[in-house]
Image (cartoon, rainbow, N blue to C red; front, top):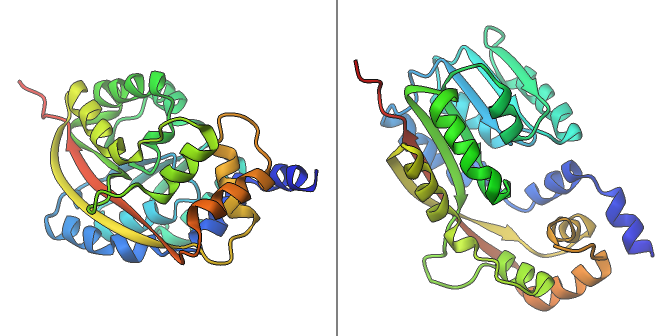
Amino acid sequence: MAFDRMASSISYNDIMVSLRRRFDEINDVLPVFDDVRSKRLVDGARSCAIVGCGSGEMELAFVEHCMPAIETLCAVEPDADSVVDLRARIARQLPPNVRSAVVADAAQIWAADTDRVFDVVVMFHVVSDIPEPDRRALFDRLFDAVIRPDGLLVIVTRTGRRDGTQSTESRIMEALNRRPYVDSKWYEEARRLAESVGFTACYERRYGLNVNVENLDAAYFGFYARECDQPTSLETVERIVREVIGDAKWSRKEFVFGVFRKPAAHS
C-alpha cells in the first residue's frame, strides 16, 4: 500500500523536524530558562551531558542560556540522522573552546558504559521513551556513577493539563492501541523515580505550548504510526487522528521542568 511505503520512508529525524515546525518550544520555555539563570542553578556547571537529545535544539539553547562556564559537553542520541544534525548544531552554536563528543547510543547503554562524571545531565522529553524495566537501572546508574556529588539531573516531561482534560496525544494513542495512555502522570512518575534513587527535587516549574494541528501531513501521522503497539498503516492513523482532532486548529501540551540534586558527599 502507498501509505505503508510512505510510512517506512519517513525517518524519525524527518518526523521530528516536521513536527517542530508546528510549535516554538524554545520561545515557550524561555521564561523557565530565564528563571533558572536568575537563580544560578547551573551557572557553575563545567561539564554537561545531554541525553536522548535528537538534534539538540532545545538542549543546546538551555546550555547556551544557562551554563556560561561550560567546558565539556557530551551529547547522546541513538538516531543516526539526528546525530548528523546534532554534530552540525554543536559546531555552530557552542564556542570553539568547549570540548564536545557525540555518542550514537541509547541513554541506558551509554550510562552503563561511560566512565565520565558530569556536573549536569539533561534529559528533555526522553524519560517516558525509555522502557520501564530500563528506567530504574538508568536512574540508579546516573545517581551512583554518572553525576558528581552536588550535581544535577534536569528533566522535562509531560504533565496533566491544568484544566484536567485529556491531551490530544493521549486520546489518539488510546484510540490506536486500545489501552490507557496516561501522559498526565509522566512527570510525577519521573519525579518519584528520581527521588527513590536518592535525588532531591530543588526546582520545578510548569510551562505549556500550543501545537498547530492544521494542514496535517504524512510526518504528523508517521509520528503516531511509530508509537503504535502493532504495525499500523498511515491510512488508519490518519483516519483516527482526524476523528480525534476534528475541526480543532490547536492542541495544548503541558510540561514540568524539574531540577534534581544529588546530595553532596559526606566526609
